[in-house]
Image 1 (cartoon, helix red, strand yellow):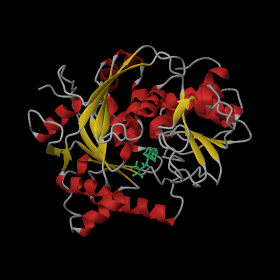
Image 2 (cartoon, helix red, strand yellow):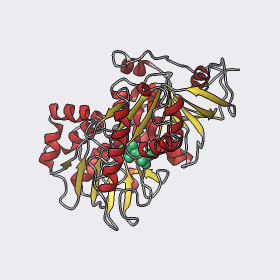
Image 3 (cartoon, rainbow, N blue to C red):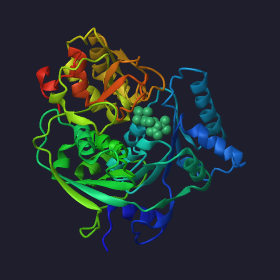
Image 4 (cartoon, helix red, strand yellow):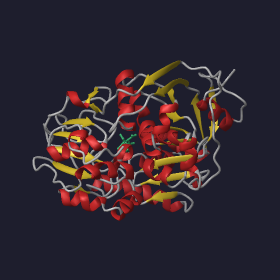
Length: 425
Ligand SMILES: CC(C)[C@H](C(=O)O)[C@@H](O)C(=O)O
Ligand code: SF4
């Protein structure tokens, strides 16, 4: 029987020729990822079992100090301290220090993950690496602890749903809009414990950075992971960047899927998710004119250089509306430096935006950009759950960076075409 991409990757890491959905497998891991929010819990678990000196493959472990960075209080500072103290025991563990950025931006950017890899991370957006053809999934801190000690994990082989895209995207329709549209159709539980396999010729128009955004939000539909089929865009991205050998993995023509959908994207406009779920998504035109108190541009969803370019193209030569605050946070130090070289940071500062250090920033209220009761924020992040960015009565809307920048300029949700100097995407 034919195999999906996910099944082939799991089989290869279980030392088998094939696996079937529902089967339990023990798998060897290529990378184990953690951050300053999740690693302390894993470390405490390892300590409880007296295994602090028994970490199996420290060179496979990558820890980012991104969520609480810089720390906002004693509790978050202690999380960072504990993560660092653990890493100090193992020089082979890679630590991305405070200010270096978010793991899901850094790891692909530095070529640390490639096609065919199997990755777990104690962070739900570990699925981001599916964009380069890896099977990558978020786990709890306890699973991370066990994997750190054994180098392995176990998993029930998930079913796969396939999404085939056709048509040509319109200006300002990005990977973010595609995935928001998908979640709008499927609901937040539409692919629970299943893999999203993305394919189709329309995807050739989506850059790797857009694909990282698409894969990043698989979890927002309940997905175990989201994998983009390997093609020339993947090849161009990985060639010359990958730090380890990678294994392009393709679905068989007779692979079995739980469902196959075909979506024509030609007529779709930018999407906005209204509070308090990513599935509460509508066309931008139906929420235009709604006033905001904050615009946030950043995160592992849309904090990459192309996102900052898209925002800067709209904010260039303009001022942000004085009724709101606009916060821009590059997803990594490399993104920050590139944005500086291209003059983007100057554009944001001249416009009156606040530029923060590479980190998760305001995304989940871990260090800054906290919302007051009743505040409304348009954010380029991936979740708009109740209370995520601050007060439980605050409202978070999700969009792509062009919509966010247009909104920053006018103070109200705005279609970027209305204020654009020229289309950028
Ligand atoms: C705190 C962390 C473990 C969490 C996650 O698992 O995703 C965070 O990154 C988020 O986006 O909510
Ligand atoms: S940027 Fe947001 S979604 Fe991404 S890892 Fe950080 S907190 Fe989670």
